[in-house]
Image 1 (spheres, helix red, strand yellow):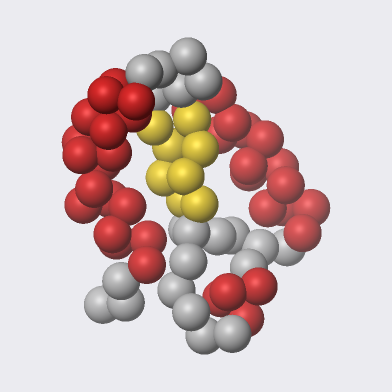
Image 2 (cartoon, helix red, strand yellow):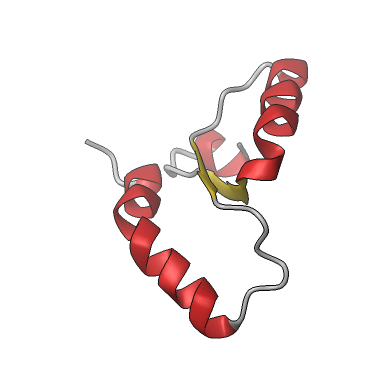
Length: 68
């Protein structure tokens, strides 16, 4: 949210395991940041798998930071 307060579009990416936690954190802070949730888990994925996940999500990732 620091970036947003400076006028820079931003958002965050997390795995689907954290949907509820992100919502709770946003409510407690009074913010609703742009977010993208990808398939969980990610910690054990190979570099190639992470690159594939990024390619699959690239349009959604860009939409987090591009003002329309």
